[in-house]
Length: 247
Length: 247
DNA sequence: TCAACGGCTTGACGCAGATCAACGATCCCG
DNA sequence: CGGGATCGTTGATCTGCGTCAAGCCGTTGA
Image 1 (cartoon, rainbow over the protein chains, first blue to last red):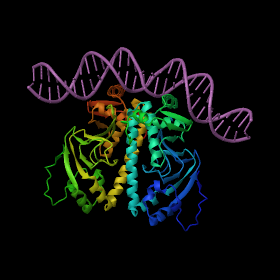
Image 2 (cartoon, helix red, strand yellow):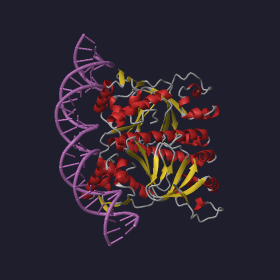
Image 3 (cartoon, rainbow over the protein chains, first blue to last red):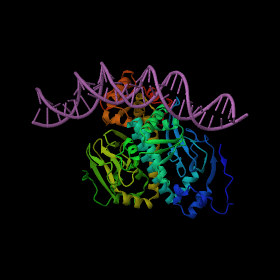
Image 4 (tube, rainbow over the protein chains, first blue to last red):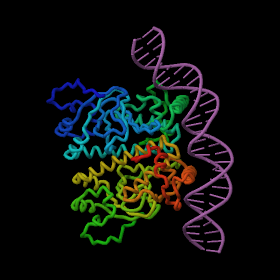
């Protein structure tokens, strides 16, 4: 299971959130001191190892999470084991929005990391008196919904090459939003996970990656990192009209 | 374009919302008189004809809509014309949540109907002082996100038969939520629209429908309505474990 | 009443990507 | 540093669904 973080360098007085590197990326970033204090009071900060399960589909939905470091895969299963990964989460992402009584998805750590865990009931109660946080959550949910719509377009209508190109463009944008160049892409997930995210098989992901490599569009640095050599061409392949690409 | 509704049977004094049949299905259902009054003050109630465009992908996102009658398709296009329908909306559904500066989708009337239109800025401003409405919107967004995740599973991993069966189960659930039996299903959309929603072609939708008909799982009443003869079998085909099926 | 049109169905065929299979690369853990 | 397990790549073959094509049916409008 999940271990409580021990290395918290402050002793009860100062707010741990004030040191949190994920804050500027998180919904809690909109809160000022007092709100942050109250939010912090109902949260448990935890670390997790790669492969650890945060949420299991079908379990009672008691917790919400704010990822503060590392990466997480969120997925749904069919009875026969087919898997669809509905998203990868990184620092600043929120987990647990879309739930009724029971989780409709599973979440597992892709890499080691950490998260703030909240009791759903306490969180909802607190939300009533923190309207800014609720607004931030609504914004977040709206963005996620938009991303989900883009992914539906990808899964329903794009070819294998377009899917992979779109995926790499997404990661590039994410990197740029996080302050990077968007040229070097890290892939903390396996080929099988990319496949289950894009509605393909590992073999197809591998083949398409090779094709992009041969074409000189990308260059593999290691198995889990690559560099985009021809961004414009990649954007075209992704099915955007080159230029920008908010997809 | 959209015509202002003329047949409003009250003259400025009483709130038109109080007569609205979609209210119990809508986010505005959580509001009491005063809030409803203020919401109504910034809304235009409009009717639309089948085929009318409510929102065009790429246009400045100035409006939000609350569908009060009829049905609407929401979709995204690729440059070459491939289309993915991301949802069908009916009375009570909200349109416009997932937007930045510009609409990331188009919306067209499937059948004639009506909607309340809001200026996005005014709505957001009003939201600040109507926390109940904001909470309702967050709930709505969360449910939509969950539905989107289910659709991602469908598009990424289900077979043609599973997709159609899932679609019919969804419509059945929707009918039951609206107070119906869930046995007779209305299909206001064409086969092409079903196909673009399920990531298939019209031909495949037609073939699969025939197969379900021959198997006695469904019975076509007209081209646009059918009855579910073997709900349990349909649920199994949908890739749920028979029983219920919250997908 | 009939022609023209759009939507639907059905059949024949082709192909993108899945499946099956073999092998090479990488990563652990002792 | 060595051996087994896992992950990734590549090739050969298969297949579910797409594509192309033809015909049907209901609706509309002159």
